[in-house]
Image: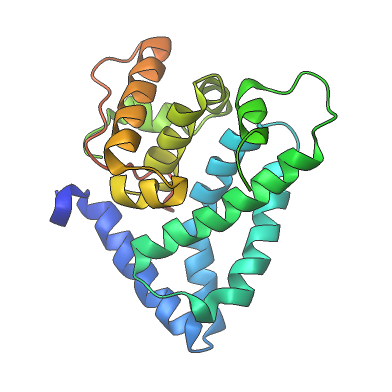
Length: 208
Protein backbone atom coordinates (compact mmCIF):
# COMPACT_ATOMS: atom_id res chain seq x y z
CA UNK A 1 0.00 0.00 0.00
CA UNK A 2 1.16 3.55 -0.66
CA UNK A 3 0.77 6.65 1.40
CA UNK A 4 -2.65 7.32 2.90
CA UNK A 5 -3.83 3.78 2.14
CA UNK A 6 -3.80 4.28 -1.62
CA UNK A 7 -2.59 1.33 -3.70
CA UNK A 8 0.96 1.92 -4.95
CA UNK A 9 -0.14 1.52 -8.58
CA UNK A 10 -2.81 4.18 -8.19
CA UNK A 11 -0.35 6.44 -6.39
CA UNK A 12 2.26 6.01 -9.13
CA UNK A 13 -0.29 6.77 -11.84
CA UNK A 14 -1.45 9.88 -10.01
CA UNK A 15 2.16 11.04 -9.72
CA UNK A 16 2.56 10.56 -13.47
CA UNK A 17 -0.73 12.35 -14.03
CA UNK A 18 0.35 15.26 -11.85
CA UNK A 19 3.54 15.70 -13.85
CA UNK A 20 1.62 15.53 -17.12
CA UNK A 21 -0.94 18.11 -15.99
CA UNK A 22 1.77 20.51 -14.85
CA UNK A 23 3.55 20.19 -18.19
CA UNK A 24 0.27 20.58 -20.08
CA UNK A 25 -0.40 23.81 -18.21
CA UNK A 26 2.93 25.02 -19.60
CA UNK A 27 1.72 24.30 -23.12
CA UNK A 28 3.03 20.77 -23.67
CA UNK A 29 0.44 19.14 -25.94
CA UNK A 30 2.02 15.69 -25.63
CA UNK A 31 1.67 15.95 -21.85
CA UNK A 32 -2.01 16.80 -22.23
CA UNK A 33 -2.40 13.65 -24.33
CA UNK A 34 -0.84 11.64 -21.49
CA UNK A 35 -3.23 13.18 -18.99
CA UNK A 36 -6.13 12.36 -21.30
CA UNK A 37 -4.96 8.74 -21.63
CA UNK A 38 -4.74 8.33 -17.86
CA UNK A 39 -8.10 9.92 -17.06
CA UNK A 40 -10.40 9.11 -19.99
CA UNK A 41 -11.17 5.40 -19.28
CA UNK A 42 -12.36 6.08 -15.74
CA UNK A 43 -14.22 9.20 -16.80
CA UNK A 44 -16.16 7.34 -19.49
CA UNK A 45 -16.90 4.50 -17.07
CA UNK A 46 -18.24 7.03 -14.56
CA UNK A 47 -20.43 8.66 -17.20
CA UNK A 48 -21.76 5.30 -18.39
CA UNK A 49 -22.83 4.63 -14.84
CA UNK A 50 -24.66 7.96 -14.75
CA UNK A 51 -26.35 8.05 -18.15
CA UNK A 52 -26.43 4.40 -19.25
CA UNK A 53 -24.35 2.11 -21.39
CA UNK A 54 -26.31 2.24 -24.64
CA UNK A 55 -24.95 4.09 -27.65
CA UNK A 56 -22.20 6.69 -27.60
CA UNK A 57 -23.78 9.07 -25.08
CA UNK A 58 -21.11 8.69 -22.40
CA UNK A 59 -18.33 9.21 -24.92
CA UNK A 60 -20.10 12.28 -26.32
CA UNK A 61 -20.51 13.79 -22.84
CA UNK A 62 -16.86 13.02 -22.09
CA UNK A 63 -15.87 14.86 -25.26
CA UNK A 64 -17.87 17.89 -24.12
CA UNK A 65 -16.22 17.69 -20.72
CA UNK A 66 -12.74 17.57 -22.24
CA UNK A 67 -13.43 20.73 -24.20
CA UNK A 68 -14.18 22.47 -20.91
CA UNK A 69 -11.20 20.82 -19.21
CA UNK A 70 -8.85 22.01 -21.95
CA UNK A 71 -10.33 25.51 -21.87
CA UNK A 72 -10.00 25.89 -18.10
CA UNK A 73 -6.81 23.89 -17.57
CA UNK A 74 -4.85 26.98 -16.60
CA UNK A 75 -7.18 27.55 -13.65
CA UNK A 76 -6.65 24.12 -12.14
CA UNK A 77 -4.56 23.93 -8.99
CA UNK A 78 -3.69 20.58 -7.49
CA UNK A 79 -2.00 17.22 -7.98
CA UNK A 80 -2.87 14.19 -10.09
CA UNK A 81 -5.52 12.91 -7.70
CA UNK A 82 -7.00 16.39 -7.56
CA UNK A 83 -7.12 16.50 -11.35
CA UNK A 84 -9.15 13.29 -11.41
CA UNK A 85 -11.63 14.85 -9.01
CA UNK A 86 -11.77 18.11 -10.97
CA UNK A 87 -12.43 16.33 -14.26
CA UNK A 88 -15.07 14.11 -12.64
CA UNK A 89 -16.87 17.19 -11.33
CA UNK A 90 -16.92 18.76 -14.79
CA UNK A 91 -18.13 15.52 -16.38
CA UNK A 92 -20.81 15.16 -13.71
CA UNK A 93 -22.18 18.61 -14.52
CA UNK A 94 -22.26 17.76 -18.23
CA UNK A 95 -24.10 14.52 -17.41
CA UNK A 96 -26.69 16.46 -15.42
CA UNK A 97 -27.17 18.80 -18.37
CA UNK A 98 -27.74 15.80 -20.64
CA UNK A 99 -30.23 14.19 -18.24
CA UNK A 100 -32.19 17.41 -17.88
CA UNK A 101 -32.45 17.65 -21.66
CA UNK A 102 -33.87 14.14 -21.67
CA UNK A 103 -36.68 14.83 -19.20
CA UNK A 104 -39.34 13.84 -21.73
CA UNK A 105 -37.87 10.42 -22.46
CA UNK A 106 -40.19 7.57 -21.34
CA UNK A 107 -39.22 5.27 -18.48
CA UNK A 108 -35.87 6.70 -17.45
CA UNK A 109 -33.53 4.44 -15.52
CA UNK A 110 -33.72 4.70 -11.74
CA UNK A 111 -30.36 6.47 -11.50
CA UNK A 112 -31.31 8.88 -14.27
CA UNK A 113 -34.57 9.77 -12.51
CA UNK A 114 -32.68 10.53 -9.31
CA UNK A 115 -30.19 12.67 -11.21
CA UNK A 116 -32.97 14.77 -12.70
CA UNK A 117 -33.99 15.75 -9.20
CA UNK A 118 -30.53 16.97 -8.21
CA UNK A 119 -29.46 20.60 -8.12
CA UNK A 120 -27.58 22.03 -10.98
CA UNK A 121 -8.90 0.38 -2.52
CA UNK A 122 -7.74 -1.07 -0.78
CA UNK A 123 -8.03 -4.62 -1.82
CA UNK A 124 -11.31 -4.92 -3.62
CA UNK A 125 -11.17 -8.51 -4.93
CA UNK A 126 -9.49 -8.80 -8.32
CA UNK A 127 -12.59 -10.46 -9.75
CA UNK A 128 -14.69 -7.48 -8.75
CA UNK A 129 -12.21 -5.07 -10.29
CA UNK A 130 -12.36 -6.97 -13.55
CA UNK A 131 -16.12 -7.45 -13.52
CA UNK A 132 -16.99 -3.90 -12.58
CA UNK A 133 -15.59 -2.57 -15.85
CA UNK A 134 -18.14 -4.54 -17.86
CA UNK A 135 -21.45 -3.29 -19.17
CA UNK A 136 -23.28 -5.81 -17.01
CA UNK A 137 -21.90 -4.40 -13.80
CA UNK A 138 -22.32 -0.79 -14.90
CA UNK A 139 -25.96 -1.69 -15.45
CA UNK A 140 -26.07 -3.18 -11.95
CA UNK A 141 -24.54 0.00 -10.54
CA UNK A 142 -27.34 1.91 -12.23
CA UNK A 143 -29.84 -0.13 -10.21
CA UNK A 144 -28.30 0.90 -6.88
CA UNK A 145 -29.69 3.83 -4.89
CA UNK A 146 -28.29 7.07 -6.29
CA UNK A 147 -25.90 7.79 -3.43
CA UNK A 148 -24.44 4.29 -3.54
CA UNK A 149 -24.15 4.27 -7.33
CA UNK A 150 -22.22 7.52 -7.51
CA UNK A 151 -20.00 6.63 -4.59
CA UNK A 152 -19.05 3.31 -6.19
CA UNK A 153 -18.43 4.94 -9.56
CA UNK A 154 -16.17 7.62 -8.13
CA UNK A 155 -14.29 5.31 -5.77
CA UNK A 156 -13.83 2.24 -7.96
CA UNK A 157 -14.20 3.40 -11.56
CA UNK A 158 -12.66 6.89 -11.41
CA UNK A 159 -10.26 5.90 -8.61
CA UNK A 160 -10.86 8.76 -6.19
CA UNK A 161 -10.30 8.44 -2.46
CA UNK A 162 -13.02 9.18 0.08
CA UNK A 163 -12.35 12.91 0.60
CA UNK A 164 -12.03 13.56 -3.14
CA UNK A 165 -15.26 11.67 -3.86
CA UNK A 166 -16.97 13.67 -1.12
CA UNK A 167 -15.85 16.94 -2.71
CA UNK A 168 -17.27 15.91 -6.08
CA UNK A 169 -20.59 14.96 -4.49
CA UNK A 170 -20.70 17.81 -1.97
CA UNK A 171 -21.10 15.37 0.93
CA UNK A 172 -19.20 14.34 4.04
CA UNK A 173 -16.45 11.73 3.48
CA UNK A 174 -18.04 9.39 6.02
CA UNK A 175 -21.35 9.42 4.18
CA UNK A 176 -19.65 8.67 0.87
CA UNK A 177 -17.57 5.91 2.41
CA UNK A 178 -20.67 4.27 3.88
CA UNK A 179 -22.56 4.55 0.59
CA UNK A 180 -19.65 3.05 -1.35
CA UNK A 181 -19.30 0.19 1.12
CA UNK A 182 -23.00 -0.64 0.92
CA UNK A 183 -23.02 -0.36 -2.86
CA UNK A 184 -19.97 -2.58 -3.28
CA UNK A 185 -21.45 -5.14 -0.90
CA UNK A 186 -24.67 -5.26 -2.96
CA UNK A 187 -22.69 -5.59 -6.18
CA UNK A 188 -20.63 -8.37 -4.68
CA UNK A 189 -23.77 -10.22 -3.66
CA UNK A 190 -25.30 -9.88 -7.11
CA UNK A 191 -22.08 -10.99 -8.79
CA UNK A 192 -21.55 -13.86 -6.39
CA UNK A 193 -18.30 -12.35 -5.07
CA UNK A 194 -17.47 -12.33 -1.40
CA UNK A 195 -15.50 -9.89 0.71
CA UNK A 196 -15.96 -6.78 -1.35
CA UNK A 197 -14.88 -3.81 0.76
CA UNK A 198 -14.11 -0.15 0.32
CA UNK A 199 -11.07 0.87 2.34
CA UNK A 200 -9.56 2.88 -0.48
CA UNK A 201 -9.94 3.93 -4.12
CA UNK A 202 -9.96 1.39 -6.87
CA UNK A 203 -7.86 1.56 -9.99
CA UNK A 204 -10.23 0.54 -12.75
CA UNK A 205 -10.20 3.88 -14.46
CA UNK A 206 -6.46 3.87 -14.90
CA UNK A 207 -4.75 2.87 -18.09
CA UNK A 208 -2.60 -0.21 -17.79
